Amino acid sequence: MNRTTIIASLGLLGAAMLLAFRPPVAEEFPAELVKFKPYTGNPLFKGTGDPATWDEKIRERGYILREGGKYYMWYTGYTNATGEDMKYLGLATSDDGLKWTRYAKNPIHTTLWVEDMCVLKEGNTYYMFAESRDDIAHLLTSGDRVNWKDHGAIDIRLRNGSPIARGALWNADGLERKGNLVPFL
View 1 (cartoon, rainbow, N blue to C red):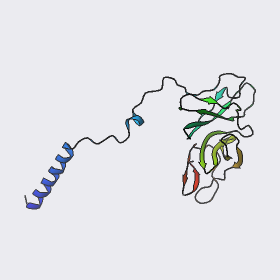
View 2: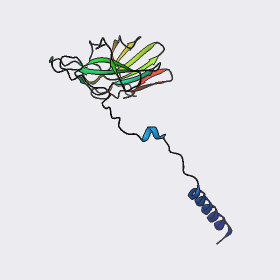
View 3: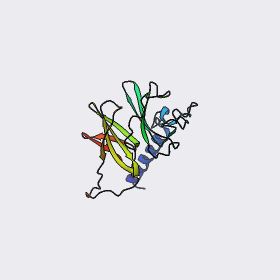
View 4: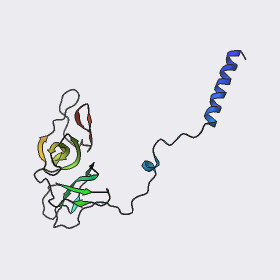
């Protein structure tokens, strides 16, 4: 063997020994994020089960926002008892994220089918990106978390500028990026 081969082999052997005897790497995620047990009090929030109430049943996903030490959850409720097909928006609050109290004046929005929402706050305004009837994405705004104004369907376009095809495309989430509120699709 020549000298270069010996040095390279010793270098590789040394690197292998360092890797073999180094202390274990810390977990990539904190244990509380990956090692947990189901909460025995599940479900934390559900429909009333009473066909006389507007939220006898809960539809799909709600959205939780923590603000000022309190949790706010917007959710979609409905009942089949009336024969009405409308899905209404409700609000519940919690101090600990486990025990929820329905807002006394629910439903808080009754003129638009609202589900699969995401709520972001910018300044004093809350922005809700929500799916409506026939999977049409809408933008709603509020100054108080309760009274929502519908700004109509969101004009969603592909990168080339053409309108996106109608149909289920909604993922109830979003973020603020470079001063813009961006819903995820």
